[in-house]
Length: 420
Image (cartoon, rainbow, N blue to C red; front, side, top):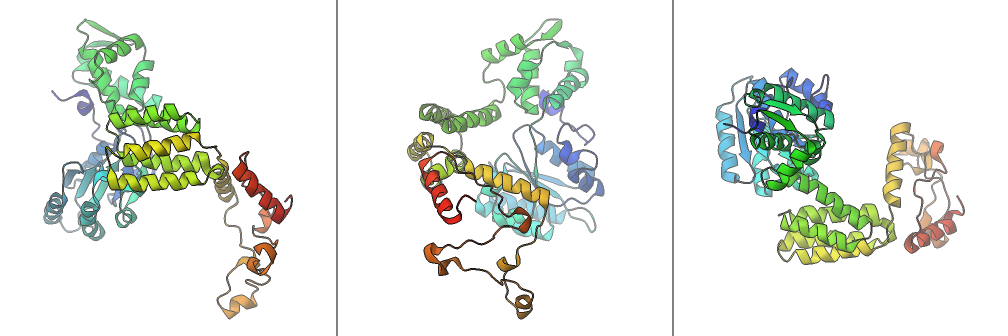
């Protein structure tokens, strides 16, 4: 008998739960599927949110050959063999065969290179699935040939719909008298992961041989404590522990940060994943309070790529302690977010004429670059002039925070601009 998660795998978009922003009525991916013409794309999202299922539904809907490769077990030779089979199975005017690659972030550069020609020529329609940010792990030429769609963790409403459907319609569970008296523990342990939710449900039901199965929070917690490895908890650890790790660095607790990193190391986490999060933390949480933090984090990332485990734990630990004990500032993070929000609200404001480039005589006659003051021609390499669009002149995005490094920057800005 197949596991419950496989038995409940939807076969059509009408049965698909979640991701309404992609496959709901009039959503972008839904329109593309209904049109019968699907271009290559990558699905990025946490485990158990329907990436593989969506790829299978698309292949079924388009009635096209469907090939699957796992980045964990496939090499360049396997990729080329699949492409050759796909080429021989492609018929005139029919949709290209679909090549689904699970965990595409684990494909090496050479493996990804071997896909480029087939994707560019339309020999196959590539659908990649990844839990990692594709901009870090997928080569730029391949990424540029694919659309990117972000899948979200399932919310409580989605998970409840899945639970009720499983209890009422699954060929095995529907034979049992199951009552979902409490579901908070199921929601908490599943962490937005549909597969994990169904695995937990199946585990709890199979462990109960009574005539009526009453599911409560206490029953779920007790069952999972007795069988800690009986369900897929990697995704939960992956996202909960990295959250605790980053928050410990942000909260200036080096000991807690080291503990959570040790948990990740012992759990088999990819060292590059940890290093990337340190780079992000250095920019987002330490920022201008200690600009050296970003330099060290970036150097740590480079070192990790060169040495890997187990020695990689040492530069990672050094960087973690440095970031956690550094003064903190998120002024740059807040500033760019505010600037983006203003741009979205105000649209494309015109560039002031004196800031425009004037490569032609016509542009000079129109006043482009007229009146621009070259700062290096002035004492201190500064002279006041307007750089903002007219409607935003005087607006401040960056607001310095209370760290010695930023106070020095603020003082220099006051020397230049006064109290502007």
